[in-house]
Length: 479
Ligand code: AMP
Image 1 (cartoon, rainbow, N blue to C red):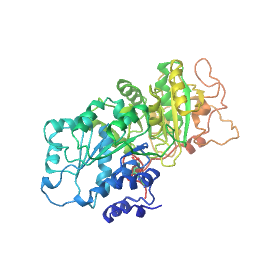
Image 2 (image 1 turned 120 degrees about the vertical axis):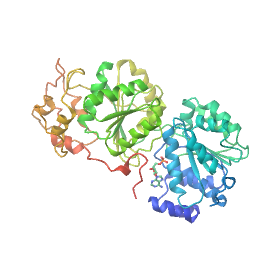
Image 3 (image 1 turned 90 degrees about the horizontal axis):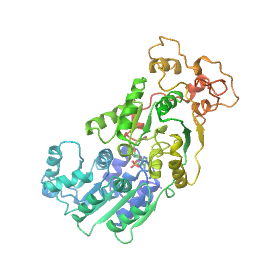
Image 4 (image 1 turned 120 degrees about the horizontal axis):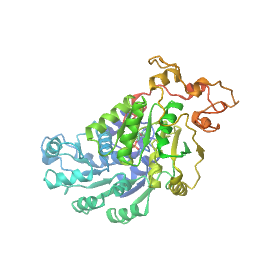
C-alpha cells in the first residue's frame, strides 16, 4: 500500500514525499480513510507507530477547503484542536503539523504552560486553523479570551490515558463543553483501560471506529526484557552506572518514580563522570528542551526522567531503557519500554527490583501475560567506593573513542582479570552485564571467577558509536 491510495491533496503528498515516507504505517492505513470520511476514531497506538501523521494528514485533508493565504485573523478560525498531556508531546505534534502542512496555507500554533503567554497570545490573535495545546494553558487562554473554540470541528485527544493519569479530566470536560456538539472527535491512547473507554463514551459519538494496531496492552515484541534483583536501595545508583558502563550505552533513558529521585540520580551519575541530566515536571520548559537537545546531540548520554516528562517523546531507535524504580502502574511499564525497540529495531529494557517491589513486578507480568527473566546483579564494587572517572573507564573500555588517556591503572577486575572464553559469542541480547550477573561474588563484592567476564572485543562489539541526530528526538525520519 502507498500513500497514493488515500486521495490526499498533492500539496500534502509533496510534503510526505519530502519527509521520506514511502509506505503508510498500520495505524495510518486504518485511520486515514476513516478520518477523511469524517468518522470518530478511537485508536490504540503508542508513540512510534506513526499515529501523529495518522490523525494530522487526514485532518489537513479535511481542512484543505478552508486553506487561505489571507492575513485577516477572521479567515483563520480554530478548526482543529489537538490536546496533549505534556509540553514535549504538544511541541512534537506541532512540529509534525508544520512538516505536513508545509505547502498548505493552513496556520497552526502550539500553546503550553511554563513559558510566557504573550508570544502565544500574539499567534492566537493572528488566527490559526490548527491549535495544539496542553489543557491547562489552553484554559488560561480561553479565560483571557485570546482564543475562541466555538468554531472547532475536529478534536484530537492524544495520549488520553496519560491525560487521565495526570488528572486532566476536569479540564478536558471544561474544554469539551466549549466545543460545538457537532464535531469529529479522535482519541488516541497507548492502552484501552476501562477509564479510557468511559472517556470515549463521553467525548466521542456513539459508534467510533476502534483501531488497535498492537494487541491490547501488549509490549513491543522486539524488546528484550530483564529484571535485576538488587538488595538495597543504596545499590541502585551503582547498578545503573554499571549497566551503562558495561553495555557501553550512549543513549539511554533511566526512569524514576519521583522528580526528586530523578534529579538525585542524575547528579550522582554526573559525579561518576557519566554525562547525565534529569528531565521532569519541576524543570522549566527551557531546561527540559535544553536537556532534550543535548540528549539528541549525544552530549547527554543518560537522561533520567519521570514518566510524565518522558511520555510520548518520539525517540526512535533508542537502544535501551532502564527502570531505576519499577513503576507503580503496570501500564507505565509498557510506555517506558516502548521508548526502545521501535520501528523494528531491537531494544533492551532493564529494570532494577528491590525485594519489596515483587508485588509491582507481579502486576506488570500479569498485564504482559508473561514472566520477565530475573537475574541477580552483582555489583563490581560497593556503591560508596570511589570509582575511576568516566574518562578513565572510557579510555579503557572503548579504544575507538579518543578520550583522555587513563592516569591511573583501573582497579576494576573486569579489566585486570584474564578472560576465558565460554564459547558462545556475545550479542546485544546477551549483553555484558548478563554475564557479570552470573559469577559468584566474594564478600568484598569483587568477582571470584572470571568466567562471566566479557572480553574487550566483545564489549566494543556491543557498544554503539555516536548516533546520528535524525535518529533521535523528533528528528527527521530516515528516507
Ligand atoms: P509518532 O508515532 O507519530 O510519534 O511517529 C513516530 C515516528 O515515525 C516519527 O518520527 C514520524 O516522523 C515517523 N513516521 C510517521 N509515519 C511514517 C511513515 N509512514 N513512514 C516512516 N516514518 C514515519
